[in-house]
Length: 361
Image (cartoon, rainbow, N blue to C red; front, side):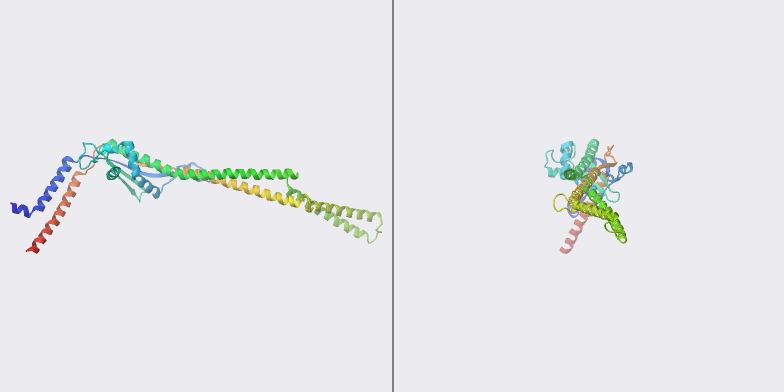
């Protein structure tokens, strides 16, 4: 009997392992309840050029945002938040839980608690459907559901804070720019009004154009008068009353033209061409400042819309379930897996021992 026992020791140990695992899963392993939730991220699709009901109802979701959310849900920070809200250390270390499955101590270090929690919370990203599938195991149905619900709430809050932080910084910068542009427009407008008041002209450019029109008319009238005098000089005496009248008109027209031209190009004082050039510069600066201010306002509204668009909403496809019965551990499945692994392992040992015996012989 001893010889048989020693010869088949590995199979005895294999049978003992299978029996121990069977006893554990049949009588000792504590039931675990599973709560599941399926979620996607949505953000409002609002176009800056216009608002409509359809634009508010439509939405976008991205794999990148979902992966960021998955990483946060699996982070140490999330484990700390779950502990603060639900006291998971106390829940997972209850004396009623079997020693193999329970957390070793309610005061266990954060690193060990995080590793343990990672085995109880599983988050999978469905790349095809762009959905996060949350699976939580706990030792009571209410706690499993509470953990899943907290994950959803904290995840949505984190994504909103992350999006709002960048949007608020952009918004503050644009608001400062808008204030500066508004002051610039006001300064340019005041400079233009002061210049108009100083020269007593509402529109120097219009005045210059008016003088050019007058000069053109005077020159045309001068040309007509000179042609008339030239025609009369062929048959009248230069001292005749008609010739003297035309000569006087020509002198008066030339004098008027000279005066009007002097208003435009006088060397000293407020020449209208200089006044008009300065006025055009000020007017152009005012228009440019107004255009910049208008663009800044558009950018401000676009940034506000972008801030609203960056708000993320966790859209729940399946709300965290309240388990009615335990689904973990899968007793028969786990026992069969352990049994097969034990058989394979000890079969390898048996073959190894047989090879060693053959070589000795």
